[in-house]
Length: 459
Image (tube, rainbow, N blue to C red; front, side):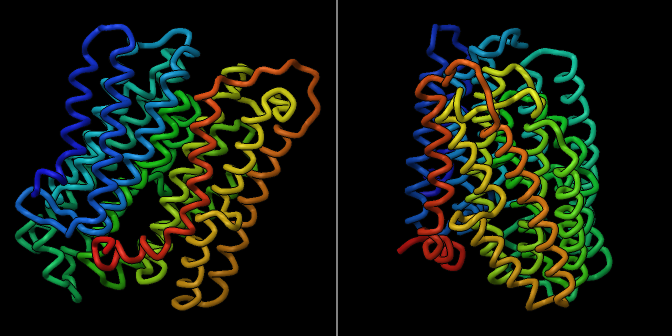
């Protein structure tokens, strides 16, 4: 039965190979079919028991990550079929773009499925290799610069996480996830503690956690909208997945406090940077950084806060991918990244405008979206574990981020404009609307999410 859990990797690998064909529109067809097939498989897997062997480790957390990746991957591929024509001077032909996108999805499925921290490191490193060229798709000087910065900073972080594997192996004599989970470490030695903290820093670089976050706004500011969407929606959570595994195998106080501190600082720094931001894609990039910081806080606290972090990541994946899709619609028509150049979206692109408004509310934790429920559970976990001052400080900066994003986006949407109507075609409107709706519908699936995390499957 183990082959069923490998099917998402198999489908994306086959899709990538077939995309090397130069037949007209064939790469789009193959990519959409491969993506839809992964949705069907990952949706089926949640009803199957957990599975573990020498290569795979599939439990409730893995299943949720598989569903997230397949859903955002599918919406990204579908949106790309209409968006790619707006790129005037692409770095490579369209079939190679889909080849890289499918290969990118393969590396993420691989990372959340394998039963070894060494292989997880390989998977996260492979996401960098497969996604770097996607950042430079628009083939201009600024996108190339962002690509190199992404490679250098993220690879530096992954060197730290590679060394963390050496420390973890030295202390435990294994990198097998299933074996480490069964050890139930309660009093880690200095080597294991240091290795765990290094892993948090190393993988935190890929997740956009302070202070190794500087690549994030550059990449989102210059990458095409579909690439920004899949980066923010699932690539960063894949890095957080590995960090969650570290916190599960080494649940010691010092590692949890260290993780909490990084997450807390990430939220504070991101909120301040959002206030000063005048570039709408970079604004959403800092919003992603804030959400990843909140998720890390939840993962570090455990229990209900851990469940809140997963709910936050799921809802954020749908809402933020929608927001970045919509920024692509705006950029394609207004030809500017600056907020001051974008006025009256509600009059010129009404579908885009109102979907963007709701997706912006979703990513900033507005009720009744799933992000609000997730953040509420994390804040409740903080109240149980830390003095009230820390919780009030966090809530204050969350409010600052909420005001910064929604005020700036609202100004773009509802300001006056005398321009003509220029709404995107149907696919460019429907895909973001569906994802924004799913960010809300997550709230109705919270019992199932909790059941998957606790029992590994829906019965």
